[in-house]
Length: 149
Image (tube, rainbow, N blue to C red; front, top):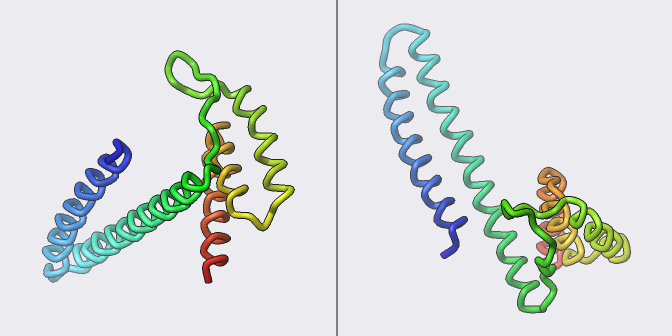
């Protein structure tokens, strides 16, 4: 099991414990006769529900991304991680930007192929653009799922 999975499990367990505690506190506040504690109790119920939804969505995103990575790995299509790194282990931005052009042109040439979007997402991530990396990975996931239907 990877360090990332272990970390995700630990964070999930801690959040679940937090949700239980907040649920207990919410119940205590909801039983109070005054309005303000009741409103606080409702807020304490809603916030963990939103948190649980966000956690579930992140875990689903991670598992779907991992499934696509396994498919690409079995096909020999995963991008090679050979970019130069700084002494701290970070990818050198200029090298990532150069490699990005290759993956961008690949996605432009095959816009209907989820594999090219997956690799483009990895290039965005290597370049430090996490927002676009996640959006592009979501596109790859939805394209692959639509292709299965």
